[in-house]
Length: 349
Image (cartoon, rainbow, N blue to C red; front, side, top):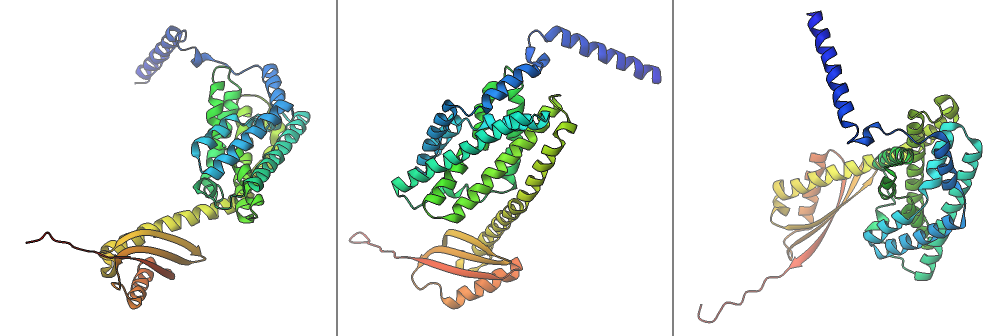
């Protein structure tokens, strides 16, 4: 039995070796090695330099992102993500942590900080000049980050570091920039400050910090895994990154839990009202908005029905019914859109 297993193992290794030798010429990417340390060093220093080109390109990206956010245009915002050069110094920070290179860390951190303030200032000025104070979904979608956003940042940081260390897949970097979206949150910070909406600015700041820490942490790990640097050299930087992730994880986790509770409540309420409630079963439920206040749910319901078809007493009964099924206190606000029907039959019918 052991002899048979040994023969199968030897035969398998031979087949794999023959397959590899016969096909690696057609699939050169299978044998591709990381960029040599000296070459990657040069690339990282170029990306960390606070040059005029960097600031001009970042300013233009900030302008595009701000106008796209104010216009609620997703396509314009994607264009700003592609133009933005902010991934350069951030990946350089991850690389400098992996190697324990203090000079590169200081240079890339300076470039990043000045770029961040430039982007926020650009957005602030544009918001003041344009004067728009009503926000669309593209802005509101960036003020309530969750752990899902941190997960995207971790994956994007690993992808960015891996792409930087390979010559033939550098084309993946624009996709990484789109996935993690660094400039739009900074532009939302500027819009929030420019419109005196501090909650918007705070939420977008948390999103940017989550993206930043996620990219740096996972990027450093990918560089270490490819033998650029070591865990010993990167220990201090990784500890700081982990601490930042844990600190940000508290509000991000609460935000995700809030989203999940609201979504579960929305599905339950929609089902209970349309299938189990006599009062609302024959109405057209146009919209359900749910807000949490501790354990309490504030439900704003918009229905279309005939005038005077729903009474205040019926709304109280529905609220009691929802509380019994969802096991939590509920404030139910119902907005009725009256429907009037007219019939004009043809003469003689």
